[in-house]
Amino acid sequence: MKSTAKAQAQVRSLKERLEARFSGSATINSVRQANDANGWPMLFCSIGGVEAATNPVIAVRIKSQDAVSKDVFGNALVAFSPHDLELAYETAVPARTDIIKAMAELGKMGFKILVKEITAATAVTEASIDAAAVAASLESEVQWPSKGM
Image (cartoon, rainbow, N blue to C red; front, side, top):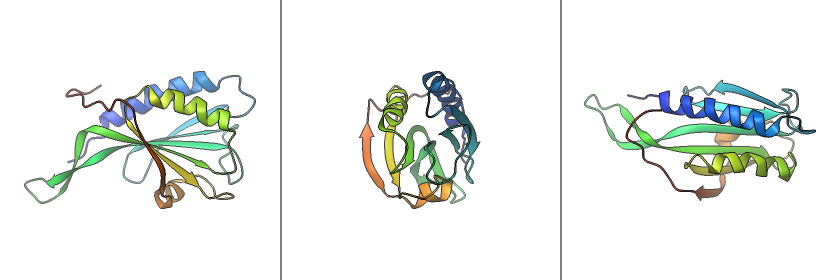
């Protein structure tokens, strides 16, 4: 059994904060929400919604951690909490200041942040994020709340 409700609520809140953080920016000025193939929420921050290779794109995905155990039917479970937050960007772009702006907001969430650097000249997509290795794993006051948002 999987519920994406907590992740969806968190990404809605994060989207509003990132839109405020990037508003009036000469670089990243657009934040788009989407879901990956498994239903986990994603955000794509870009210039005017252009998310092609060599354009500045910062992607964020929130996923629940595997609960390790199975349910009574033998299906895999994911934990209600904690969640991992994946931050991905193409190595050549975007500007470091934009990455720092995003990290400032992500750090407030209390999730484990998995930084993934996408090879230069490769578009930041769900597939490229899945294929990328974790470049850094940052834990900032990981929260284990027992109630939904």
